[in-house]
Image (cartoon, rainbow over all chains, first blue to last red; front, side, top):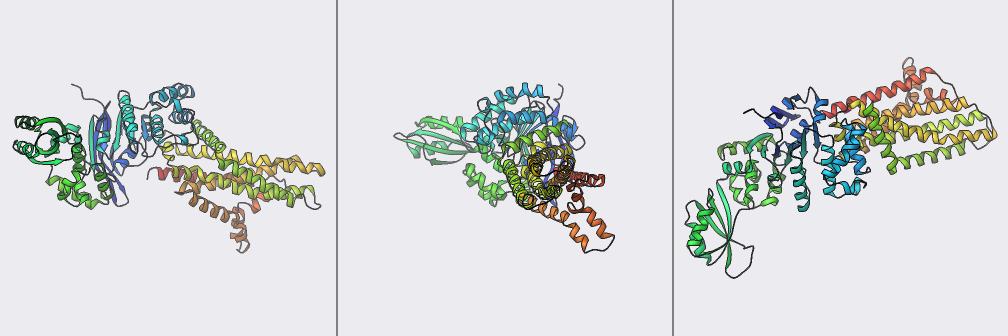
Length: 364
Length: 240
């Protein structure tokens, strides 16, 4: 079997801002056609890495190659191959969507005739046709984000580098953005960043978790979960006696804890249980409940499980002051994530502590 | 050159669509009109003196217009986060600088030349040569070009437009008032300082209709120097 061609190849990349190390040592590669998510808390080094890839920043040391071209030696050529969307889309509010995309296309080397042909295609692909004659300043945040993606793909780049493309979008816009990103998958290799795992886990083939400027873990969502989650969480909704249900669930081998939580649906005798277990015990728990005469209404994996994997990988323990805070974080969801983001990445020392803790604990 | 023209085209469109471009243009014409009315149309004077006085006022206005026009070109883009579009596109830094400079120069030239009706009014009751008018405008455009390059340099080194405006104003003031410093210094320093002054010794011959090659070369050199400095600054910041 031949090895797929690496569109991005980063080897021992370091980036320093003065004395402060923002990235490094960082090594990873991305093969053609992949859509990969770069995940990390704020200050982890995501944006710096993406800016280096987009030839907007010079690396301090190491090798960064795009399609075999070095970003330092051949920045002009690399820029032609990349479509880059920074965290704030670079939009000229006084221009119409169509004029802006035409300008972006010409800027990336397309001839006038090619740009005339390409812009309507991109407007169609990004569902911007209906607002093409509007001034960008008058568009909603979701549309502006779309225009940002449109400018990144307008010249048909091999590689798309998108910095937090889903950030700040409302739920409907997030769904639309995911569909848009999936639709781009065939034509482009995509590297996108986020600090919220659940926002991009459905979109990406593979995830790279970055912490303190280094890759903390890599793999698919399932691989990361299997590798790192000591305890899995399932929520079950049942009809019956609470104590009896708890007793039945607790008797299943591997179950660590069972607690009652608020049921999401009403009805006489309807209760919900949150079960923490070592490994996947869903089938065994269901069997035990049914055997105990408890009516089983719903079983699902804990909603925040993915987020807890990410927070663990991203070094959130350090930010919250030690591993003792972990259970609380697992229940914190996005609000919890924001809280730890605010305190994470304040310096290398804290991040190094997180690394040490990780090596001791979860063994990434 | 293609990329520079592309950038220039966008900038000109931006000036046309923004309030800033129109406001600066209108204010410049208003000030020039008031100046011409107060200094040129009052009392009995020689036509050539009236024209010289008009160019004197217009040159001051043009310097300020040029700096104001240049401030948003890079610092404004940096503030809005749009500079990254240019930085990550396959175009060279010099093309970005030249494109923006050409656009601003076109606007400065347009605003300057729209005032041509004022010198032409002199023909109603007096007589001046068209050559004098042409040389005077040449001097003003060259002065505007140099002031624009100075403004672009301060725009390139500044993170904000306010800082760029302050730096640009200060640098321009220093460059203009060098002849005053020259007055209180000894030879040969005074000669050098006087020769480096942006307005006094260099602009006066243009106002009187005298076209000297050395003055043209001076303004072209100042423009080139500050555009080169702006390009190098952009290059350094791009990779920082």
